[in-house]
Image (cartoon, rainbow, N blue to C red; front, side, top):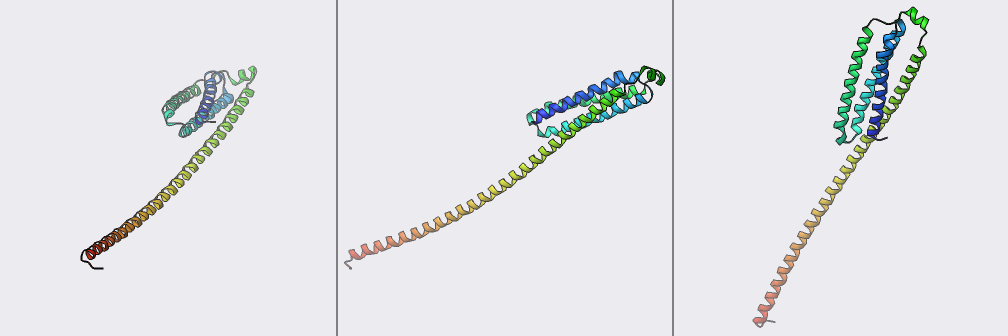
Length: 206
């Protein structure tokens, strides 16, 4: 799964959790009382913590996205944070309001504990999925770090090879310069000998 696809998956998880929190705030909590109401509030608080964790995972996943996409994704994360802050305020207001039906009325009307159990199971499943994705992100970061170290080592080896080649070139250059010097000396010696031979011939010397 690519970085952008994983980011989209996290955003979908956030939207699901956000919808569940909003449903509890706007529908479930106002109609409850007593321990059932407290249990729903605690469940909403846990989902808010889950939403915060999802946002943290999204921020971490930004490190694996292309630079050209980061600004746009950061804007989306800021929007999600704003939505989450509003849910926190709404939950606080809903928690402080006068409860709905009395415990006796709730008992006569029946309970929806099964719905809460189902919501808790869904929450646990989402947490497990989020944990697996976080582990996957961590592995990808470790792989990126390992590749960076390997690249650094290769670069150092290349630089060392270049340094050795430069030393060899300088050594060859010095050798050629020394050879040129010997050639110049030999040429001067041969020219001197030629001049002496010409002089001797001119003077009739054998």
